[in-house]
Image (tube, rainbow, N blue to C red; front, side, top):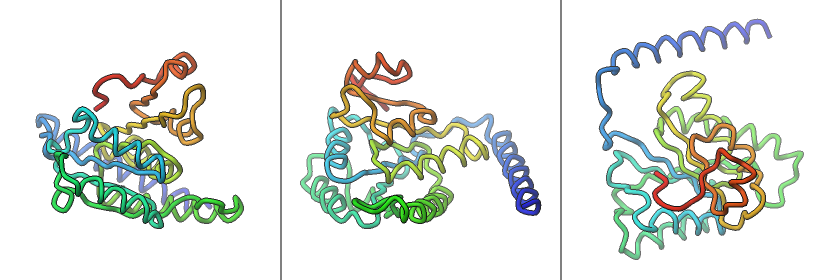
Length: 220
């Protein structure tokens, strides 16, 4: 245990040193919008439909201003993959599906009807896979409306960017489901402490959680 603790401390010191170096190196430089990486994490079923509607409503997300657009889905979520492809292939959107979007399949913490006991192992796998995805892609903005697929990835992203100081300007945007009127979802409750912007659709939730923002206009 002492050896593992020592290694973890050494890694943290090295990570902080590199972070300080890169921050000092780039301190006089203004980042260009077209260098930013936008990662959208889809849930499944109704969550995917809600996210697609929000992505395209009133030009809510201007994909063209980002250098990279990454869509993350559950590794076994074939329905969402088909739904997303069909939605953007119909035309009428600002995004070129084949050219502008990178699809990443992420291991889920828990499948539908999976037992809680076996979900402990799959959650560990999801955390490790999320760490690999975040370390490789380095997203500047993570957008999600849940459910569980996004939670491990968002916490890994928060840990890398804010604790290890990889990118202090990185943001997490969580958009609560439209059907949540008086209480937050489990994913919402878990991500509320680390989300930079937390959006809800109903004023009732604003009264209970002052930190949240009621969905009205542009949210990004």
